[in-house]
Structures are given as C-alpha cells and as structure tokens.
Image 1 (cartoon, rainbow, N blue to C red):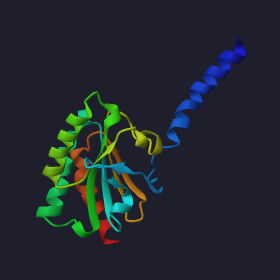
Image 2 (image 1 turned 90 degrees about the horizontal axis):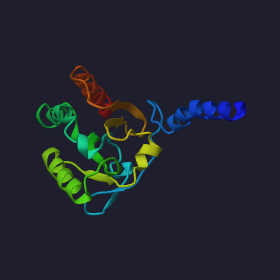
Image 3 (image 1 turned 90 degrees about the vertical axis):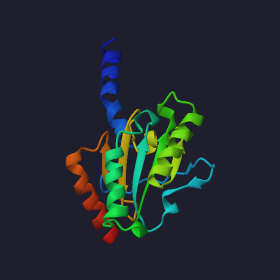
Image 4 (image 1 turned 180 degrees about the vertical axis):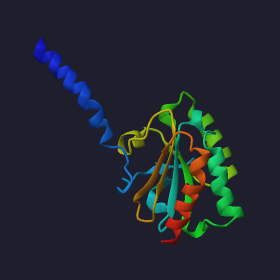
Length: 177
C-alpha cells in the first residue's frame, strides 16, 4: 500500500513538469503549426516570411480581453507609423476547443475582429497549441516571435497597461533587425 501511495504522490508531482515541457519559453524557436482560416485556406508562420509576428491565441469567450492592447498596436502601426507594416504582422488564432460556442458563431465573431483589425483569423479546432506550445485553455495569450520565429514575448491574460509601450518598443526594435 505504501508503494502505491508513494507512486501516486510521485506521479502527481511529476505531472506539472511533464505538462510544462511543451510550454513556450523566451529564446526558443516556436514549433510550427498549420491552421485554416474561415475559407479553409491553410496558413503557417511561414505564410508571413521576414515578418515579426504578434500571435493572439484566443478563447472566443475572452475575445475582447486585449482589445486595448490591439488598439495600441494598430495606432502604432497605422497612425503613428512607428511599427513598419512591411516587417510586422499581427493575427489571431481562435482556440475553438476551449468554448461552448458553435463554430458558426465563432466564425462570425472572428469575422468582425478580422474586419476591425484588418487581419487574418485562423482556427485551432483541435487545441493543437495547448499541447505544442503549452497554451492555456480558457484564456487569451499573445506570443511575439521575431523574423526567425524565436519567441521574444509571451503574455497570458490581459496585457497590463503598464507593459503596452514596452511591448510596442520591442516590436519596433525587432522589425528593425
């Protein structure tokens, strides 16, 4: 009985370590993926060669959480022009596995966001990035990767207002490399 109890305790302690192995870390190369858009056209990170990427991995139930951050990115890109569009692409990947909402409703919400931010929205129907990148379920995560697909930033949940300017400056610097 003691052996069984010890084994269960050991397994419980090791489980978080095993799950964390797929988690993105700053400085590592982001593992590739393939996701479709609403028209079933497949995209990968290489769909935007030579660009710094801002990847918004979003549970549809949290779709408005980082609108202030994305508005600031749009302003820096379109109004202030401090982020060069030739070297930057922000887009969304919808985590459809983390919601109760039907896919038709999700595509409708995604279509409005795509129009608002003039961007591409992709769909992770099977929760691939939960495993491959360690993305949390029921959340909103922003990942910044450089032109070589090295992870430069991972922001889970709402981006604090106090960090917005520093993230924008990081993107500006990465686009100039």
